Image (cartoon, rainbow, N blue to C red; front, top):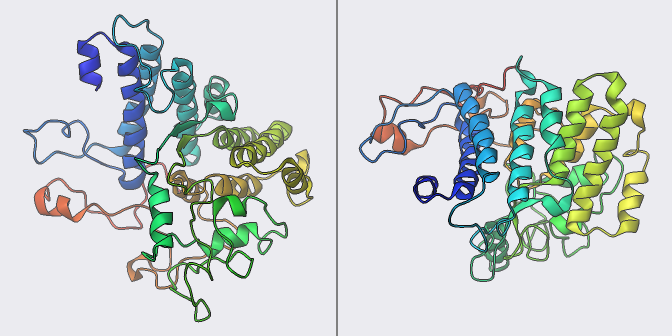
Amino acid sequence: MELLAEAQGAPNYVGAAKVMRAINLALLVNAWNNVPYTDAFFAQTIKPTYDNGQQLYTEIFTLLTDGIAKLQETPSALTMGADDFMFGGNLPRWIKTAHALRARYLNHLSKTSAYNPDDVLAAIANGLASNADNAKVNYTTAVWNPWGSVAVNQAGLTLDGWISEQIVQAMDGTSFGVVDPRMIFMFSRTRHGNFRGTKNGAGRDPDVVDLRLDASTLVEASYYANRTSPVLVMTYAEQKFIEAEAYLAKGAAFKPQAYAAYLAGIGAHMDMLGVATVDKDTYINDPVVSVGDANITLALVMKEKYVAMFLDPETWNDARRYNFQYTDMTIPVGLNPELNGQFSRRLQYPSSEFATNSANVPEVNLLDRIWWDQN
């Protein structure tokens, strides 16, 4: 797409392509660290070398910078429109998304010497202005949302999509003493009228007779798992939690700004889901949530971001940056013995790489940290 757009004088398509390349390159680096990139786009290179993950983050920021510049150019041909299934050719929204993504990736550096909260906040200043700017991929009844496929399979007894007890307990009052009204928008009640999570790695509890009805699952009635639900790429709620974290990193004098961004992030997520105003206000005004400027902490920000990033791969990035310190978060039952009772820090490379490109595949284990996960 990028090469064709360059050849045809369509800079806005070049810009969108660069932003999408940045998103996908970040997904790769965050999962595997070193990955093929400079050698990866040529058919004649069947055994590509692996690029350094830290250096690839520089490439991510370059792609976003160049993408923004191209999106701001006046096209001489091929104007984006209905073929843009995220924004319908709305270039300002593409530009805002690119800035918001820059804030996300800058925030990933929070455990490194390169982290600068002012850089994060500068990117946010040009980012999303409200939920109306949320970047999302829309689906139709002809092309289903992948999570919608899981919900349909679950309903048809191809069992999948159970909900971890850890997020249920973070929301049902068990861990924090306040009931979160977002649960019904995210997963199902059981036939007993309550919400029940599944213990990670443990399989079915003896008293769970029907896995569709006795445990909470993804269902089509939820916001995320209808067959026509959007898949979220970047949201205003996520941006507000990034903002809160950046202000906290600047020191105690900036706690009021951090607290305001934290509350705004909760409200934005609830509004996106469609939570009733009375339920939203009841939750936000609970003293467990509305702790005041002086008492805002990173733990509170990360807990609320954990909920707001439901089903998003960013949750694992946050968990590693936060060293899995969430309240009541425990390792799965039957954990891989190679992990020595610890959470996984990365993915292993695919077996196909060992079979076809063994000379270049780095030797790693699941406890090896990616470059920004330093301590």
